[in-house]
Length: 109
Image (cartoon, rainbow, N blue to C red; front, side, top):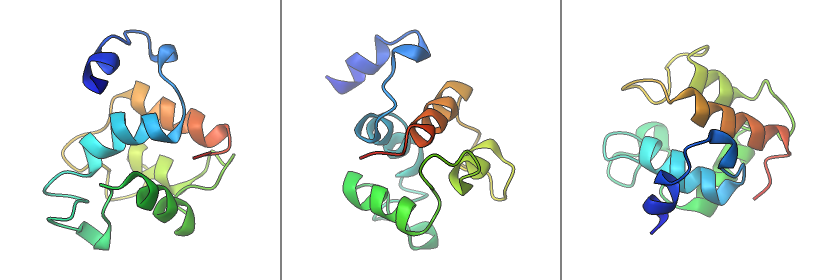
């Protein structure tokens, strides 16, 4: 059902800049894959499968600083810092913009 809701959003501005949506629509399918940050691989010791643990990790490790458009996560997603995340190809600009908006709005859970 979530995939159907995501597919129906043709305009990126219709997507919500909230953590639950970002995790389900961007982080889980793009980062919590079997070859990256899942319980199967735990690349760099990171597992993004759980929504709450993912949020806590990103903020506790300062990958995301609320209201800070210089947050390290944005540099990784834009390929400014190496390695580019995700490594198999950049996220669509609309996804990065949504993460950026979420951070700009305070990175609330």
